[in-house]
Image 1: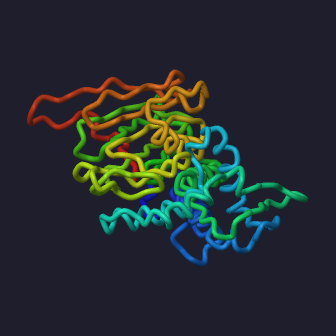
Image 2: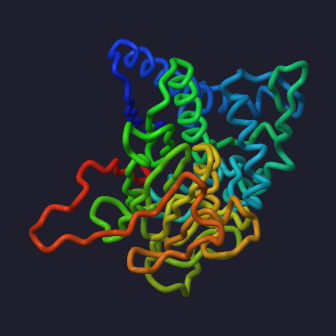
Image 3: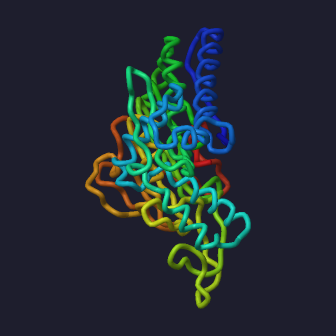
Length: 338
């Protein structure tokens, strides 16, 4: 998935811990092989052409990702949508080349965006499957697959009888029970990277937290986006944009921005953190979407959701050390969006 997964276990039997860890990382690989957007031969990449508008059975691994997406797209009010994949592909190239995509190409790609119109997930006879209407759709599960992988990995850990564990999958973090004698796993969230002054601390117990940000994936393009895409001739100088495209407007998001979402599962936190990046400070009235924070820049105060945080996530007041002194709590599990 292009990121690092780190598993921390509390277990006296090292052999049991090794077996549990191996099983956990095997589940991560299982999800990645099915859902990755980067491998042309992956099941997710082949699914639209394989379906061709007809229901087809999918693997259990991809079924989990599709099922999570099918629930979380409407919950996010369309701010999270894996059918944005074709736009994402064009936008990645635009950021690398520092050049706007061709408006006609962008407009065609935008026509395939819309989970409700393009994808229908359904289990038949206990088997997962779905129908994808447009064979040109490109599914991008980057906003949910990591979370599903974290959830599946921790389920494997618990299946081995281990109850005290923490898994960080590139900014998607979920905890089981805390270490002995602790109220929770102590974590530090860095929405804008290692050098950012913004540092959030939490105790995590039987809950998840995910960070979505663009500090490591952004670029400057001259001009302002006009109808479709592209830069207007009379526009001002270069503007910074992040890697996320709003599936509702088919326009890239300005940078910098970041979101931190708390939830019961990593899959929900993952997808809704992406949604909150898109929604910005907008209040939605949807409780799961209000369990997070939105940052409009490194120097801005976060916009706090009305239901923040999720049960099992306890904020810890930040402590700033005197100059030249090490930061306290160096044992904190730090994570950021990768």
